[in-house]
Image 1: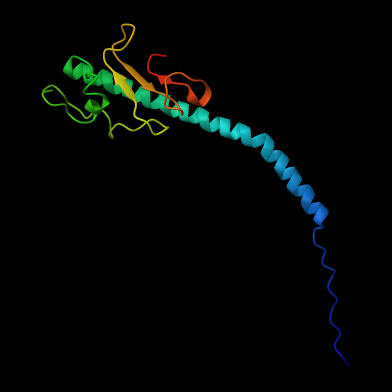
Image 2: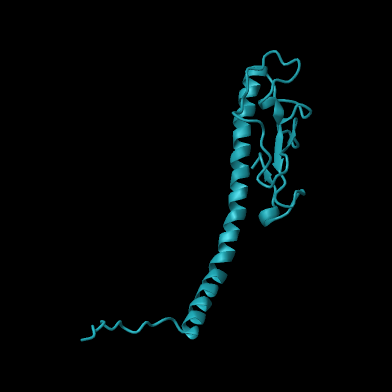
Length: 144
């Protein structure tokens, strides 16, 4: 007597129409979520620049306490990590690491004295690397 094999239930896959509907839904979700996600990336870069400038502010204040003045424009922010020549009262480093580039890969601009009677100015020029701008291209500054 031949052995009877148990029959398997018929296998059912997805139809082309069902796959197209799923892809359409995924595409619509990506269309709504994508722009919001990429807008958040620009905001986070600005927030990183603000946080770095805040750290520079604190380090500059400590530098001033030790030396009696802020670094000159020529000495720049590098004076917070490496002792400038002839600065005997320097007790740094005032930063744990060397001065990083801004989140867009450009150096921060430091001027001392700053404009409008400020003791110093620190500027990150945003994504476009130019003064002014809005959105991702907006400048991040130390005096706001």
